[in-house]
Length: 257
Image 1 (cartoon, rainbow, N blue to C red):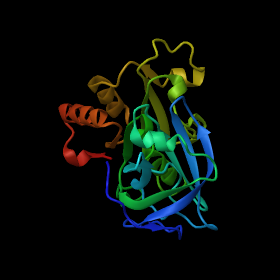
Image 2: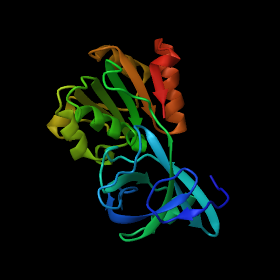
Image 3: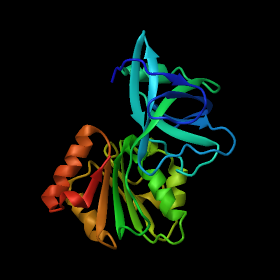
């Protein structure tokens, strides 16, 4: 979206109406087109987000102001920093700006917006259907639950990616899957065989695309009645919503980011 200019601030406190400057402390390339950016926060302060909230980035490209929304992947209680996962597109206006970033650069964010209202043990199980960078809002929710010993919510995360190499943040997801109440599954659209995958991934990975039958199988294998979270492209979100309705889930049984 291209918007008119908004006021800028440099006090490092997030505000929904004013863009605030944050310094990039590290840049890590995760795949051929996806990067993880870490931003500094003063002292031990936190960004002040609730679960599922996103923030809006401001970029200037060829004299045009462009804004895009991203959900930090860092825990909501992270102190002194926040991290954002961004996929860059060859023809994307914002991507041209983002790909020029280096450590030490200052960029402008405002927010927060949106969010997924959640209380510990509110649901018996969360079934997370995520495509690509759609895993971003799922990760803080996942970590929020596993860090709370009193929250006994089961979690099934289904991550949809092109290939095994395209799975983001494998170490973090592997660590989370070691918790008693978490399981992770993957659907890889461009892998023809699972034989070359590490053995620890073979049992919980499917090839091809996520289908209504696969979703139904996932729901039936949930340990408790699941509440479904969906995040991905517009087409992915619409497809998942259609599948859930076809299976018989009502609109109050799922949430789309």
